[in-house]
Length: 329
Image (cartoon, rainbow, N blue to C red; front, top):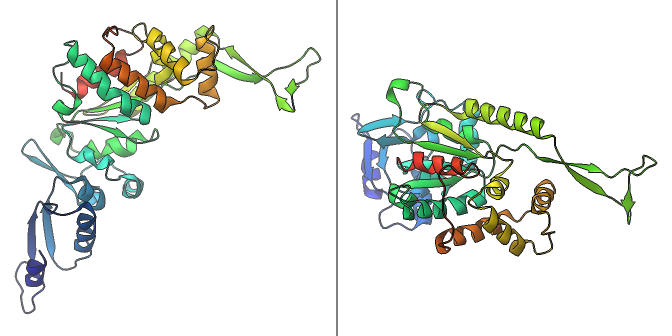
């Protein structure tokens, strides 16, 4: 490559200065890949076209300079072609790291909010395959689970959205997100005199259930809003029907019993006479060990034969549909 670059920089030459590099990453340590691609991007007055299967390189090349090849077509990611906004490019330049850059090479993508979903979904897919609900698990289907660590899904999903709807990418995109409507509210405890109750100079709080009708109305409205916000072309959104992933698993007929067992193992001090309120407290106070819970549930899915999946289970149906769409079942 160095020798060819010398030729491209030769003097007294008015012809085309074009360099073609196939699979730059071959035999190169990831750090060397990073150094070389940064160096190549600083070249001036020459045109370089590279092919790659390396997420390392995908994360380092400017997004607007990438072209995804899919189904015998080429899809440039410049602002002229995608629905990405100018500030999306700036955002993704900083946050589209090596792990997330797997999305460029996947046959389909599952975008998730956090570690819990990232840990749980592959195991759930394995369980679904074992029970004959899907024909391939995520690895076999070439699906990447991309944990964006927040809810800025549009920043990422717009990579796959084309301004020309007649030239869409054949890559199914599933967005899995929480509805984030609380079923409980937290308020300071008030005594008979109307004063806030304190113990050891700390405010005492009470957790009360929100009116069921209002909760269901707000949840339905939020789901509809999220579906309208994210759904476009090959991008579909799958929203947790209850508050969060964990709350939906708790409400799930298939998972509720096992979830409570695991919740007790992870949080041994909770009141087992009221799992629902204890879970609500942990969620509201941001004290729930979500990653540990997801790990234990994933282990149970792969090893416990007593767990059976009901595809119409209202608590997990959204996860099953998201996986089915991603694996093209």
